[in-house]
Amino acid sequence: AQSVTQLDSHVSVSEGTPVLLRCNYSSSYSPSLFWYVQHPNKGLQLLLKYTSAATLVKGINGFEAEFKKSETSFHLTKPSAHMSDAAEYFCVVSDLDDYKLSFGAGTTVTVRA
Amino acid sequence: SAVISQKPSRDICQRGTSLTIQCQVDSQVTMMFWYRQQPGQSLTLIATANQGSEATYESGFVIDKFPISRPNLTFSTLTVSNMSPEDSSIYLCSVEDGDRASQGSYEQYFGPGTRLTVT
Image (cartoon, rainbow over all chains, first blue to last red; front, side, top):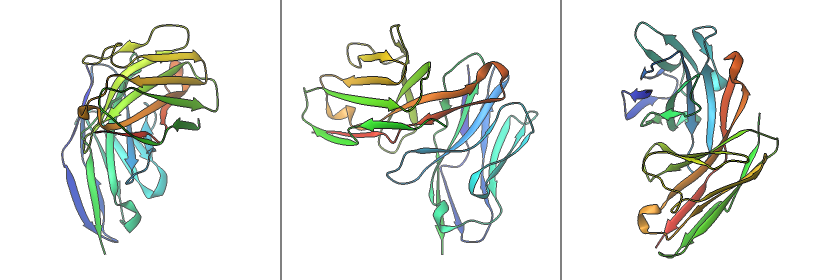
């Protein structure tokens, strides 16, 4: 069975400072990992994905994440936060032999001016 | 990437009634999924819908409450039956795109969601 733990329910940063959203996963198979963003009253948008290629994955809007198998982690980072980054972020895991996506509880990001 | 639309975008319904949500995709896809997002919560998979077969429901969800149709490769409906205030949620459909067999390029795309309020 697969599962995801997002270690922070809420992250608050100042505009222009780095953002770190932490995610640990559990998977019985070779996992695929995703980060999705949900802006208020908007749908889910895929930020980036890891599917067994390069462990450092670059996504849209300056976000990137590093897959660390030894630590079962897939933390999301951005070097400089923008006001438009304020949203809900979901870490998601999927196994190759299972179409189901398992969502983390989400991390709410607020950005202070 | 697949483009997904849902109808209605939102609705307010009375308890005891039913609502059917439509999901339309701009390309043919094998797998379609229905999720529920309760207020302030993460997403939970309701069921997987394959064209030409019965939907597969996750634990805690039953066909009588959430009947699903999948008449073709671009369309699906989810009905929320005999609604109660606890059914107030955002309902989202998604599709998988890419080549899972090669493990190199698959991802799920989500529709904009249907925001349901039951009074």
